[in-house]
Amino acid sequence: MEKLQRQHVNQGKSIKCLREEWPFWFDELGMSVHFKELTGIDLKKTFTRNSLSYFEEESMFFHVEDRFLAEEVQLEQVPLTPAVIVCGQSCYSSKRYMLSLDQNLINTNISSFISALCLMFRSYCFNIYYPSELASTLEFLQRCFFSINPEKGTKVQNKNSKRPLNLNPRVLTLIQELSDHEWR
Image (tube, rainbow, N blue to C red; front, side):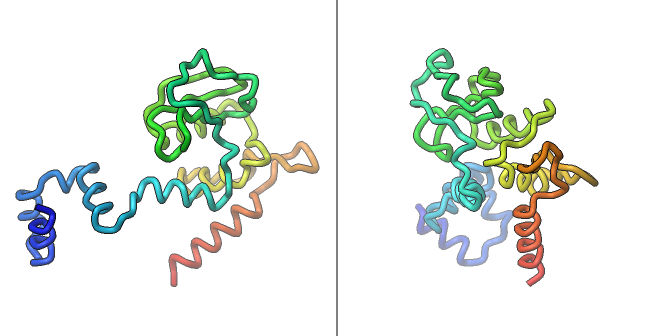
């Protein structure tokens, strides 16, 4: 069947025709599976892993066994800052996540990594500064993925004083590199 599908694509059949013959290709799961079969790449996992590994930020996650119940999480070991608790070995393949804030479980049944990351990010609306070890990653997400670009200020606190920085230099450099790359 896969050969027949590829044959139809390679023959230049119209999208309308392909959609009529292979409708599952055009929903998220079908397109993801087909793309992975052709390329060997799971785009969601690869994108997430690579975007976070640029900053080497595993510290934003706290791992527990996938079968853990909320009551079994040892909250005294979880950071005070907003943290995604990954129920499983990998934040990229887990099926369940939790969110902790000030070592309190805020949400114990989050079904996707993106939802967990967004919930963690939203928790910073409670007037919390980004932790210094995650500052670059979180500010990059804020400015580039969530398009939140305040005229002044940041949620990153200057290490040498209690004042916030204007813009994290690492994030500024990355944004400039990405902008330069887009125009090449």
